[in-house]
Image (cartoon, rainbow, N blue to C red; front, top):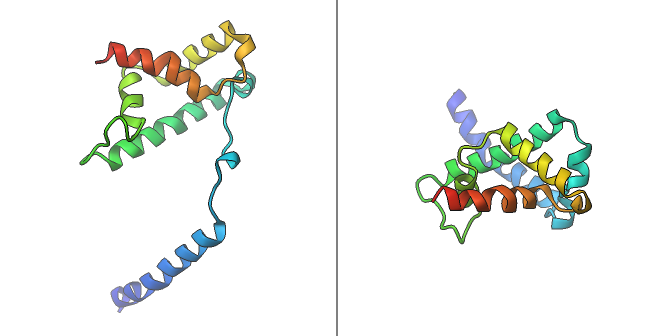
Length: 129
């Protein structure tokens, strides 16, 4: 009886999820906050680490999701991001980002993700070929 009830609820649950998705509307790019050096340099080490953990989680989920059929480098930045940061820790990434913004105080408007990409991932890809 319980199994049958669970199966009967699936269409209703699916419909409710779809309705919520439609009502929530699309997320536009301008609604997604971009963390820049201004926010980074004003953040505590704990907040910086939370940001980096979030990035690492996104990369891990995407990597796990596509494990059986990984996307080509041209289709996703995730494989390159993971290879470029190979051997790095949260603390080493945080220190590198802190150091870059300390050396470039006039460039605090640069997004943190861009700083990580060009200052760590791209050089790391050359090193981790």
